[in-house]
Image 1 (cartoon, helix red, strand yellow):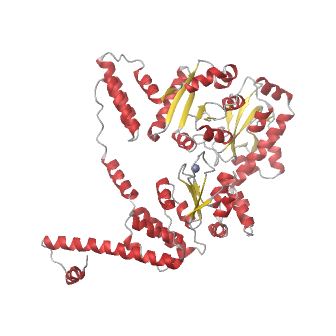
Image 2 (spheres, rainbow, N blue to C red):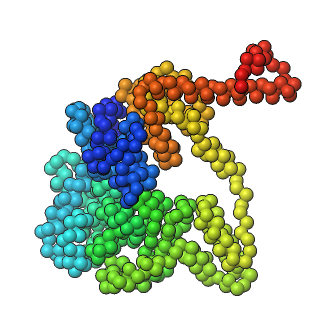
Length: 560
Ligand SMILES: [Zn+2]
């Protein structure tokens, strides 16, 4: 969030009511002290989208979307952080510090990219040659508008001139639009059809350029990796397709941007493409936010099969029960763009009969092996075991393992987990186990932060996550007069914890009743902890330990 003063952000958030803000866009009904409605970020019939007035935070129990008022505007209205902040500041009648906009590099890079996209788009309009090429490829005006397609002229400095004029050349260099070499600055993209690449909120983060009337040069040229643009995280077409992906609850993954455009043109709008890289686990996690049903589309040739194998291997460690992965392979030499144009029915038919993940894995493992021989089955089981070892401990893995064993005719032994992993597992269960009393205590403190002032509850909290929340809340309260629970919750990326905190509603009507409840809980927790000490002392006593006078006194006074 750039160099913006945290206190300023807090001041804006404290002057905003998240319930009022969201109510303008989502129908909400009261549910205890929270509000509930249909989630605007995923497709659902029963409301699982919760907004807490006390915590100034929203959370969807369905898709996991969550955040404060600023996050809501960035995700829902596709604003940048600064835009969202200034919108809220304006509504609250608070003036934005002058330095804010200037200092926000993310914002500046978005602006540079937008400026370039507009320029390329205008350039395209006046170039018959390029338009003829697009028409020949069936990219019509609607697609040009939807995907903001443009043209970089055959020139070294068209874009450079634009940015020089506005003296924002440094931003354009950082965005990868221009190149500086030997003290000369020139355009990165020349003589190419330009495809802006947007992030999921619609801001342009980079470009793909494709040659169209020349023989030399790489067919495709992407923006370099920048602060905004990371190829292994981003998917082309996600912004344009995300609504269809959620509505149809499935996605088709293809390999090129022209495939995404071609599919959209044929009415198949739930598709995205990788940007010249393999499909990574980051892509996988990103797309799971929109749907659990993923179909990959690859070329039927050797390169396509190997790309498929790589993509699947990247997904396996992140697999969850309920996620359906499947694959289709097009006839050799055809790409989705042309195939769907010529034989849409056949294409849809392929998708509907896509090969399930398990079948693909088994087929790949069996290829080149004689499964009728002992050697073949041994090799099969060795490779199958590697797959299983990569997979999480879910039902799907168990069933797939059985399937492998049936084919290989022997059991696959599970490795004894390395010690480090065992320790991690243990501590994560400890982290996940929340005592209801401790959780309630934390929740009331987050809802009534003034109670933090005379707070002496630290000694009763045993869960490490809750201790962390408690300490952050204390610190926040001391430092910040605009205490915000949202700020504390925002620090957690773990869905499970946010989920827990947002499930809790104190239903306290006033600070006084909240104080009574919290004291009651504290005394119960104190009793628990005294009980622990009591049994510990008894234990030591019966083992022949010598107890101090104080300890003896404690046993005497202890009432169960
Ligand atoms: Zn949702």
